[in-house]
Image 1: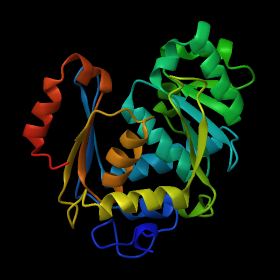
Image 2 (image 1 turned 180 degrees about the horizontal axis):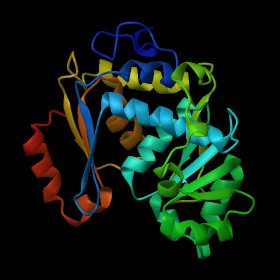
Image 3 (image 1 turned 135 degrees about the vertical axis):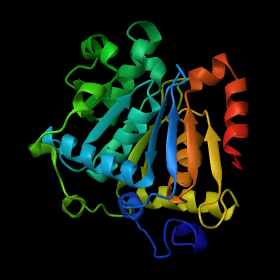
Image 4 (image 1 turned 45 degrees about the vertical axis):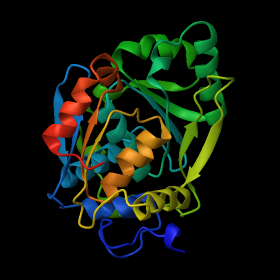
Amino acid sequence: GRLSRVGMPGLAGNDEARTLPEALGRLAGNRGGAFTFVDAARRERRFDFADLYAEAVRRAGVLHALGLQPGDRVGMVSHDDAEQLLTFLGAVMAGLIPVLIAPRHLRATVGAGHDQLGHILQTSGMAVLLVDAAATDELSAVAGGVRVHAIGALFGTSTAADQVKPDRLPRPDPDAPCFLQFTSGSTGRPKGTIVTHRNLLAGIAACTVAGQRRDGGEDRVVSWLPLHHDLGLVGFCLTPLLALSSTTLMSPGLFARRPKVWLEAIHATRATV
């Protein structure tokens, strides 16, 4: 029973959350820690927990304004980890089902890459694909009937029609899909897996039970893992977020070119995970 709960002391509150939106709601008003995103050019964007939650709610409103309905699939592929995570959280808060796609598919308009992207678009049943601005034209050409939007432009500004209060957002069932995750496709076509809210929170609880946190959010986390990767998204992003652990997420491309920056960030933040 312990692994099916996230209501353990130190994990963003003592009451049991049954879904990711319920767990995220505990971040509202919390200024005690932050997520820092470091892009490929070493530029930083910092959000404390309260700001992260507020931005997720704002993005939920923007997605609702597109006419999307709870249960719709929303694909997202970007080199910008901040945009990916904020949009992922916004989609979940809106009752939508995000599909994180590996950034290499931004270049996958011919050959096997084209076939894999088309396979993901078709099998996921996504209604909208959100991409980096530079790739909108190319991916629109291979997206079939899927609407393609540039992430930055879509969420860059809000209107009154986009505003939504957290208590007006959908309340998903714990056994409803939270997100879809696809395998890498390195040995065949990517295979999709449905991850329910109950699945996700059980996995996060397992990470925390295994000791990857300290009570009271004392852990400090540094990761370069991509967000479309299970360990990158769940292990090094959602788990520390719900544990209220300050976290630095750096671009995988930056780490690949200069591995030393990962060690420097560990040193600078005195990271424990």
